[in-house]
Amino acid sequence: MQLNFEAPSALDHFACLVGHDVAFPVLEAATSLALDAAPDLDVQGVLLQVDDWVERLRKSIPVGATALQRTFMLNAFFYEKLGFAANANDFANPANSYVHHVLQTRRGIPITLAVLWMELAQGIGLKVDGISFPGHFLVKVHVDGGIIIQDPLSGLGLTQAMLSERLEPFREGWGWPKRRWRRCICS
Image (tube, rainbow, N blue to C red; front, side, top):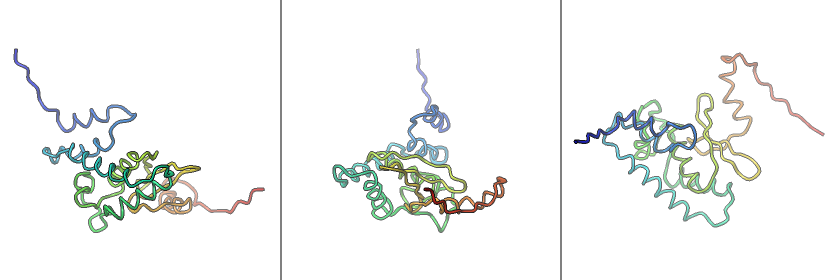
């Protein structure tokens, strides 16, 4: 009896990774998206690179650091030390959607930068979520006493007013009235 094993297609591999709604490996799934275009991609190599960064970051964080302190340290590591940023010169380049390419160039779009940033955040014990915000993927970080909504292109925290301003261009298309901010004084 001869056994015949075939490697799964890139699509089959991706479907296996995301087959469950809860707790699927986001970084591996996002990296695997490139397998169709680059069948020889070393997905495990990408995962090891990010694991190495997590370990380097962990070692630099003092014991007892708060979630807010860890967020600041992660942002300094990701944006300043590693140099990740928006690919402002070629934002529409399809390679910006490939995690392995973003790792090499340190330039990407909101979703790929968010995937990498969130993997590092989870690796240092932060609770984070992605936000499918209209026109721009964002990141939510849970900190003591609240949340931070952050732009993954820059690490900039966004206020409620800034988020509302970003929603303005979509309001009319959705049939929502223009937002008028009123100051509420509660007693």
